[in-house]
Image (cartoon, rainbow, N blue to C red; front, side, top):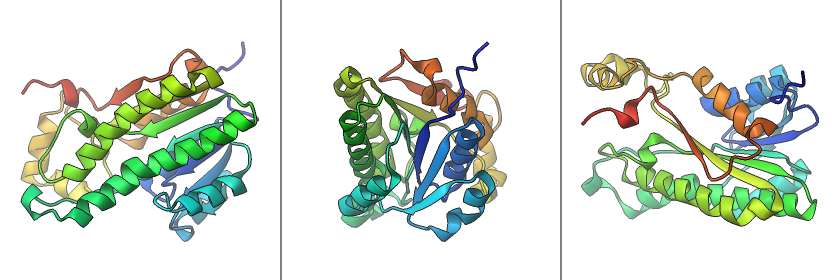
Length: 246
């Protein structure tokens, strides 16, 4: 029986590949047979993962349209895009300055738009079917205090996913999103060991944080022909957090 999750012969382009999730996505896609292109501002930070999976690294600033065009031109034909670059600025709403909001929206929403549209133009020009996967968040639907720009950007990304899905469907390009909940990492480990962090984990029905491995199935589904009739969808992976009772 043919493995419908097999990505042999396809090229995957992953933004934000220097981070925890980006590196994981690259390992998963390479493991499924894809040729992987890792893109981020911090090229040196991608070196170990790139060497381990045989990936190519590219310098990319998703907020700079020229950088986006140059990186995608250097990449050549792309079959799978994982739009993963993202940042957050955490401050109370009234302490946030315009530059804080702009910076987060510029990376998390405008950057995704720039990369996705440039990749899609290449797919259309080459008459290549493709899959665009936007990495969103449960905070696109729910909120927590202190991350106004992040929640606004992720909400916008969910709707942009649906908009792109409709417009690109006739070109055989699918556009979907993955919306993770809280993923355990070195950055948040100290918080989730604290009293407020432990209280938050208790509000997750599965009573645990997610891990990068929890996103593997959804990534392979959306990247492969297994999701050939899926577009405009969001897969939420959060242990039930976003549907928990208030």
